[in-house]
Length: 369
Image (cartoon, rainbow, N blue to C red; front, side, top):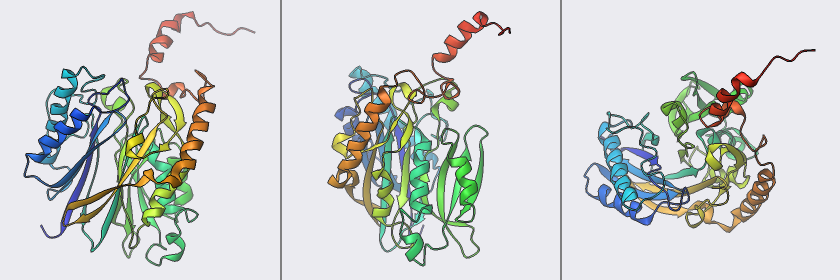
């Protein structure tokens, strides 16, 4: 198998303490116990952000491995057993089926995976968010890989000067397109500026012809409402970013989160709020079930082993971002049920608002001059 290693980050909401706040420590312990039993993995790390249980796995089985996805599904089912015993809220919420069907994608949990040839030094950062959706990564990924005001390497590193290729998915039409940046940058921004529909799925280094080559970043793009056909909570995405040596430096990869940009999610998945960068200890959203949080764990890969983690956003230099996020959260909350704090109606089709619209349908009449 050579030096190739696969990094799989798989998350699910299988029960919260209290409400949608955090993952009970027993669920994390149970996940660790289950993963320790298998010989499929090179290494693993279990963590949580808000009420989402996150499995960070390294192995030699490639992406979309039935064995690895089945393992993750079994772990989430075991954690759900614990959640039900503790009467945690929303136990098994993200498990949209009673039986594993060969691939965990489309079954509720979020998945980001990449198979790489491990370099002589392989720093990676795992970003995990709660109370938001996959489009929350659009702006940070643009800044990491296409914005020279964020990433100095795009200007001064000869290995980055030609830019990167972005793969963007249309979640409603189930289509994808590749943008070669900087050439296609303005065209790309037309789409990724609408993150509720168009999401950055992956970013690639270019080969000599300028086409997509080795993977640089991978994000989860699963939308639970589109899978289930009903509102079942926001999608709480995960993302893997490789750093250094012709890729964004670690500092360039985390810098976009020094600005708490507005994302969809928050309370009942129906509000706009700031994405607050937090360390592990503060990944506990409570104010109006939020505001939305993002956590980042850094690792060095060493023959498939996870050396770390480093809690990237625990750094005091992110305090101003947290303070700004709190100010923005206060400002947005004063809007109450009015847009733009509440999401537009076309983004709330899976909530009770659609029921209200149906009930009121016969009470509307034409406007007469």
